[in-house]
Image (cartoon, rainbow, N blue to C red; front, side, top):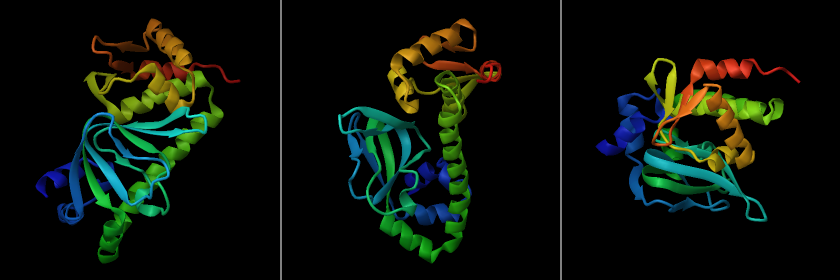
Amino acid sequence: MKSVIEIFRHVDLFKEMSENELVKIAGIANKREFRERAVVFMQGDPLNRVFFIHSGKVKIFKTDTSGKEQIVDILQPGDMFPHAGFFRKGTYPAHAEIVEKAVLAVISIEDFENLLLRYPEISIKLFRVMGEKILDLHKRLEEQVLHNTYEQIIMLLLRLAKNYGEEIEEGIIRLKSRYTNRELASMIGASRETVSRTLTHLRKKGRISIDRAGHIRVITESLKEELFSIPGD
């Protein structure tokens, strides 16, 4: 149980939980290892478990009738999926595939619901954090509706830097994982070529850089200046 508790200490959803509450949650969880490219679940499978990432990277994506893939998100340590798993019934809304060998904590939804009935104070803390998640999802939707592709790419880089970056110098955030142009494009419904051109343009302007390992480095204030300098339609 000790190792599972350590996983939950780094999960944003449980950031308001006390140590005693984490122990209760860990008591209904299991730790599992997944190899690269393993399928965690498929879109349409019965939604009966929720997953928390301790290590590795997980791709959440949907496919249309022609088989075309649309990446919803690429999740990293500290993330849970599916986001609304504890609070909805039915089936998984997307596919989940392991991108890099991963260790996940798994909780049965039925077990979790029973836990919440016994300890309603845990429910209250969860709802506070879920409110923040809902606001973030609304913000992403707003980005797609109100901003062009160039702006969406900049916003995506800033969001990845905030959620999955590490500051290596003052004002310079290195994305911990490498992202292909195809992955970035699929996150916002753009073409790979558009993302490639945009990243090249931003590099030439000194807004971002890419290190030898292929990790994007975001110069945050400079990238924000680029966003704010874009003339309105």
